[in-house]
Image (tube, rainbow, N blue to C red; front, side, top):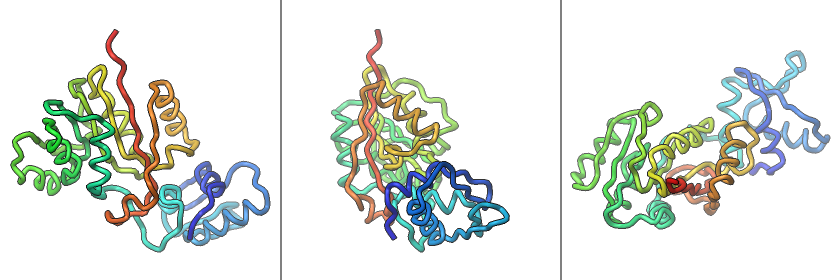
Length: 251
């Protein structure tokens, strides 16, 4: 079930409290009915006493996948790890402008799809990956130009030593924003970051999304849309963009 953009905007600004979802703002009757239909399809039911739609579980968990994919499906998707298809990995390498000899960081590296593409371009790559089995898969390749650290990237303290950062972070509850902001600290002056992000970053009105778009604008960055279904082979229908950010040269 595809969800119209105006309904996605309503869901984005809705308030959630445990199993409760409360719509905010003035809605036309048609927009309210369209939104209610989407909520019901996702498992929410209107409760007059609570003056809210109630879900069987956490309302935010039920609504987040709809905002990310633009549709309601019967399959729950956590939007944590999904491997980067080879064409997208190569696009990140090209957009980042990775050249031989560059030092590159891939945070939340998964099994290294992007890291191996960067090494193929001649870079020396440091990976950070929270899941030990994924990190082991990278290490087992014994690539002389790739290292991997098992850690939660958000708990690390990045140093500005990298020429490039290329990444496909987790998306759940706007984790992609936090990961990209943290990774930006690892760039040298003049360095460039290219990251897959949820397309929700282009329209969501949360404080984090609004602040991130302002940051993109201030740094003359870009949000380049990827085709619908770009990650279909990875098992997700999430809509995505590539964020491009450059760190200003030192004065």
